[in-house]
Amino acid sequence: MMTRSSNPAGSSKTILSTLHQWGRAILNLLLWGAAGILLVILVVLIPAFYRNLVTFPSLERQLAELETSRRPPAPVTSLNDFKGVLHAHNEWSHDSRGVLAEIIPAAKQAELDFIFFTDHPRTDIDCFPRSYHGTFDDILIISGAEKQRMLVWPLDSLCINWQMEPDSIIRRVVQHGGLVVYAHSERPHHWGNPDFQGMEIYNIHTDIKDEAMWKLLPDLIVNKKRYHRWIFRSIFDEQRRILALWDSLNTRRRVVGISANDAHNNQNIRARWFEPGTVEWVGPNADTWYIGQPAWWQKWLFSPPDTAGWIFKWEIDPYFESFRFVNTHILADRLTPRALAEHLKQGHAYIAFESLASADGFQFFATRSGKFAALMGDSLRFTPDLRLHAESPLPGRIRLVKNGVVIQEQRHTYTAVFSVQEAGIYRGEVALQLDGRWVPWIYTNPIYIFH
Ligand SMILES: [Zn+2]
Image (cartoon, rainbow, N blue to C red; front, top):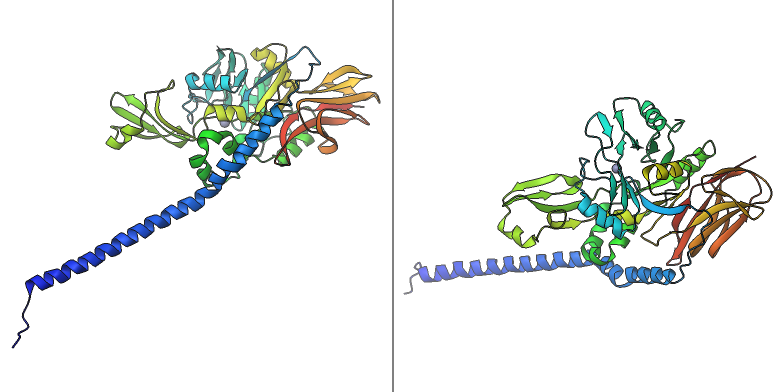
């Protein structure tokens, strides 16, 4: 008779086979999980790959084709067209680590003539000049401050007390020959202040506020190396509300429009040697993440230090991309702080989205009986023989805006001539055609025509 007895060999076999089944189940789960995650990543990245293969190359081709039709206009005055960046930060600001070793090469690459820095003050009593100023490799650097939503460039030896009321600060800077521009025009300001000379009509930071940054991530993974400019461009929205505000202010007095890069080079992940054997990891907004011994696996990320000392960087907003995105052109006789400031105050300036194309040489001016009469920013009396001229180095859509309203436009043209019917505040806009759409490229300061 068979007796049921415990069978140690059999029971361990059962346990083994159960373990085996579990193991297979777990492995299956892991494999399916991994496949699922891979699929999700692929699905998320597919549009970015499409842009890599189709959209961005096509945009590059269209711009290259446009470049073949470049025809620089003949100058109408003896002034030079200087191009630069207003509103930028360097290591003087708490939220930037930028040093000249990376700023100047980026500025050269973006073909800038000047940078007006606007570093956040370190103390309430803020004495100028401070931080970087002077000429470096032919780039004129002017130091200024950003605080209380103002950009301030004293241009001279002057101390500002940031505890004072904004209106008093503005008066003091302007009385000492300096420059004050309202920054972040989407936010409240004392628009009735009689002394400030200009306002930002476009600011990259203002524009980016309505973007969900995570939406840029697939392109930052797939397209950053080759098509960084188009990732940057994808944030662009015309700032219609701000332009309308600017137009309405200009019907009362001259308020000069400038573009603001708000360059910080701080939306990055970077590392540098803090001291031998100790690494500093720096995250967004230039905040220190970690100082200490690098983990073993980090070492394969590191390269020899670059000119600014970085041994690792993954940058969303390097200076070059911010600098070339949009520029303010100032028509001035000389490249000095005083000359640039004086011509800027007079509105002898236009802004251009230069990552699309250089606008060098663009003109907007008035003639009377065929003779040059006024440049953008100037005022003159109405007579029936007045004409306004826009001359663009590339063919585009040229619009004439009077008191905030588009009154005439001409398409696919290098030059447009508009006869003036009555007094008003007239400014020009140029758009380029890309993918069949008109994309804003240039905004001029107005010509003021009075009775
Ligand atoms: Zn800023």
